[in-house]
Image (cartoon, rainbow, N blue to C red; front, side, top):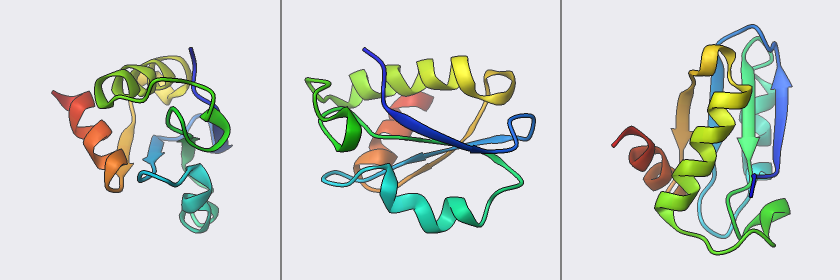
Length: 97
């Protein structure tokens, strides 16, 4: 399984990954991402939400693994800054554990 995501900005710049809260999707980060065109932004929809609604089941650990794969395959040098809100913040913390 892989996450649906949007990729914007400069692919050779530092990468920022935006992780949304529960009941939301990557669309909620549009105002922030629009202002950060000089960065490489990855904005996934977590499992069971947004365009990833059919990706089941949702779990913090499973979502963290999927986000880690997204970073390894799409982030500049396989590294990224994480921005998370609510459920997305829990996924970000699990990534760093």
